[in-house]
Length: 300
Image (cartoon, rainbow, N blue to C red; front, top):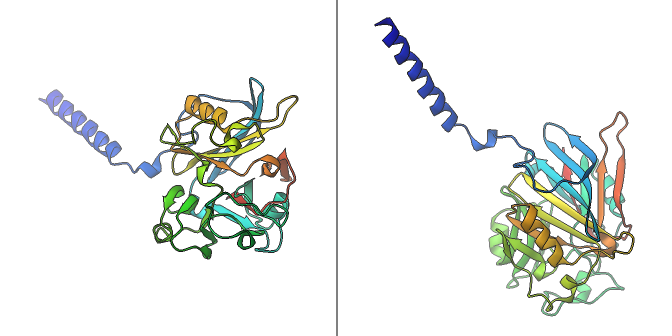
């Protein structure tokens, strides 16, 4: 009888333990990486705190040299920020932009830019060149919650930071984007969404020269709300960079991304991070120094 009672109590405890495990909040799950990524480069730097973890890895595949930055951020809505140059006045060095946000730990170039020496806009793009001198692209522009541009009737193609993390919008009504209460937006060209849930969304190869040509690149991929991957392709030796089609294939083979997005690249490509040492310092890992309009930052 005593043995039967002990067995019954043990079974009851096991059931309680199982129920508790099933009711655990997904938010309690930890964290970095969300799965073992299929591709790992040579570790150059690692930063780890209670709210932010990232690794910077240098990689070579064939004739392509690139840097992978794998990121976990605890609260993306609070910890991801945008810093801009003076609106309508000037572009700025990305290091100087990052220094405007002392709590920033990691930053990359983001939106493309228009300047007085680069006034051409893609055919059908909203607005006129004069509206875009020294300003970020996109029919909607939001920085720190302030709406700086809202072209009515012109769809938004780009990224916005909401409570759901960095979210991709493809031809969305501006009203729908603003209804999600974004605190930041970033936009480049309409075709910059490269991949959505594993589906190749780039224009057919040969129809968009910008995607076919080999250049330095900055590409952002979302794995989930809290995990992101940055890829920076650099000129190295005889290599001029990579095509967007090559990068899309790379992500398809090695990551399960919710989306992959092409940020401004070329001479704008930049990666800056704060080292985790006794005397922390900012380190520019990708060395281009082109003045740019805005950066995407991860903070503590």
